[in-house]
Image 1 (tube, rainbow, N blue to C red):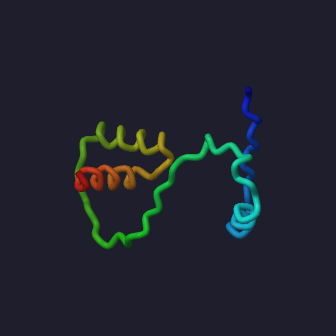
Image 2 (cartoon, rainbow, N blue to C red):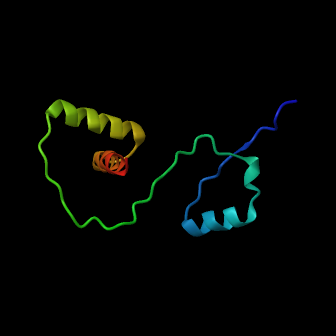
Length: 86
């Protein structure tokens, strides 16, 4: 037995439009396979870090961040957070 084809998730022009849709739609009918997890950074960033890196390492970090669609500084911050959390 095959599964019914899922609908593509629509695009919205405003947060309010998206909220109305989520409040009224049956979300089980939609395909979320292209969605990517997103992490919201709420804590204020009050401290600054300045460091020197080999150009090759910084280029690799920037390339990895671009793959993930995030700023390279966020990728570095996530790596630091993972290391401290272990």
